[in-house]
Length: 106
Image (cartoon, rainbow, N blue to C red; front, side, top):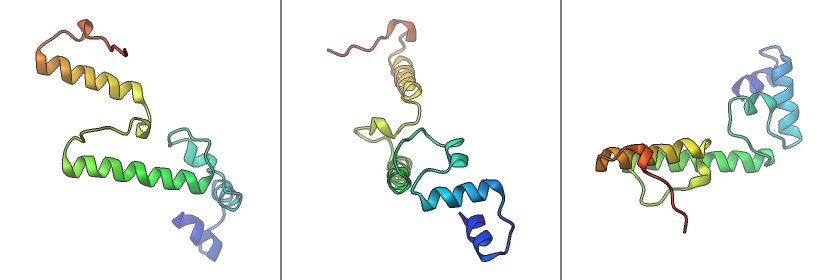
């Protein structure tokens, strides 16, 4: 967004990527270049940014205050990796082979 501001002021040349970001901001869509490095989302741009900031706050609080009591599961980009890490930590803590642990959703 800093480069977009510079381009609007005429300080740098509008590249096709900056133009796409500008057009997406005007139409409240998530810019394509952002989606290449972001979690998938169908939300409009404003809702996406609000959600991103909430995710950022969740992770920041986790880092600052240690492991949370409850996890906001949808905040994770790749939930399967999180669940695998939970299994790995449990297996290490209790000295159990990870292949012997399964999820039970009764």
